[in-house]
Length: 379
Ligand SMILES: *Cc1c(COP(=O)(O)O)cnc(C)c1O
Image (cartoon, rainbow, N blue to C red; front, side):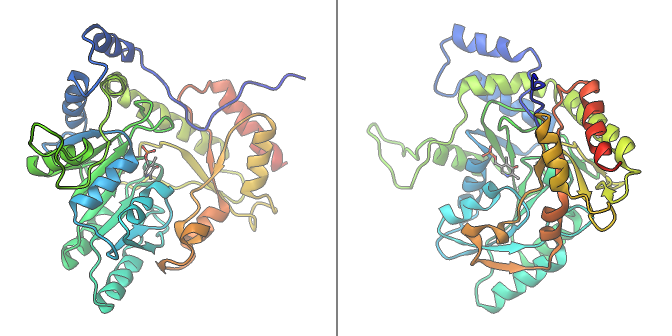
């Protein structure tokens, strides 16, 4: 028996123009370093985000978070508050800086950082005599976090927010684009994200001075001298001119990808909502979700014992990729000893949640097949 071709959770989907920008780079020998694609990618990204903020193209979202923490002065033994339910790359740069993560549970409406648990965490650190240096908040799966509430706490305690919008390019919170909501914001263009540069990221900040500092640090912190002189620790974190060319082509199809992701979500929601124990995270009225990944919660108490793992294995059997939701950082072996505030919201989401295939290259008969496999389990 032939295995059917693999269906991916979310794979790169080129628009067509990417190759043109790569050709230009080859013709002008702008293979390295930097070059016009990088400059233009930054400008085009600014336009995409409808912002006057400064954009710095970088080699990854992780690099962007690392630089954000450095720009905010995070140093050894400082506390940094971080949404627990996220990809590890949100939190790892805290450790790169020798600082201490304080993990915060999610709330149920957006699955993102819970304002109540966040304030508990802030107060705890202050009581220990050390006000946290930053709050890392994440828009999981394209669903904006509770920006109004988080910003209010940030202002009340004077702690800056690093907005991790790695999964949320194209999402909006009350007409403001995700990626412009933080004191410093970051994006990722990793291969599985809604658009990709094959690997890349961006940092979005408020002033030219901060941008200059980010670029300086991202290009090995070379002081102004004829030889290589370094008064600060540098990094090799800039995006290449070739990758930026891919990014320029990808930005042209971002709106199309957001529509396609929304169609995939709507298809699943219509087809599966009547199954007992299956729930969707409903978009909130004041937000636009890019639906990077379509997700469901499976409650075995209502689904006749069917679990998200049963669904994952049934899909896997047919060469279809699905994946549990992010495992919270406070439950990860590496982070098990760190401070944590909140209850069991994120733990339960991980227990019962599944990301369904959300590849924009997916055919409608594949979506039908996926829904058929899931419905088959409920027969
Ligand atoms: C992908 C991702 C990152 C890291 O981005 P890279 O470009 O892969 O380094 C950070 N945070 C979240 C929430 C992500 O999903």
